Length: 312
Image (spheres, rainbow, N blue to C red):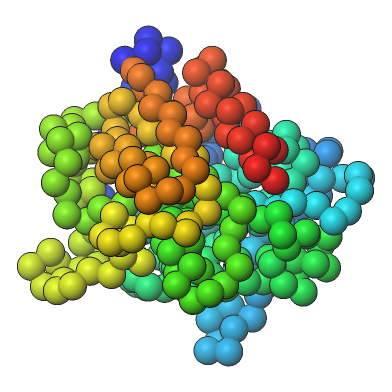
């Protein structure tokens, strides 16, 4: 492993994902520590931040945190961002520094959706919330913030990557105008847990095989009772990936999710979708923000910002 990443990884406690409450407490602890040591940005003078409640007919509103660059011309391109957290943790603060930086560096409007979490709200609640936020961003709600609906990307990290990929599949199948780009960072794609990396990586930093097992259990229920799993839950199960938005997929060498991310990128290419895959060697899951100060993490985030600017 990259020596600087290895040092950063030592700061993270191994968490038992069998217990969502423990995972959420540990995420809150990490955020508090990052704040105390000055590694967690809370605001930026170049970015306006406001939380917006998007209503729904069934009474399950979704809160969206909107990041808008201060000044400049409108309408602007936009990014719908879906945070990671194994479908069971995360909120609007979870990746707040990433969204601040993404907004500032790309000069795009960034909208982070506070989607519902499992196991209290298993599949398809999180995806439904992501779709609602996407429709809002591309509609009158986004227009009121200066969004150009023809230049919208969807981005997601880890479990958020699963939601982003599934959102693109559902938009295609429903005939909804799709995003311009799907940006998939360390994406979760396959509940079957058959790849070499997911079977072999049992003690990797931050994320390992058993964490994957627990994640899918919370999101879809026990493996023996799931029946037919929808590709909107596990995008790797989709038989046809054609006519999807162009994709950027980021994977890391020491990540159980590595091979399913690589496989998904390969299948997108085979089905005619313009796709860029960047496999970062000697890196672990989520290194780009969990080891944010390291040179390789800076390089990864710069590349993501370059890709967004080029696409939008």
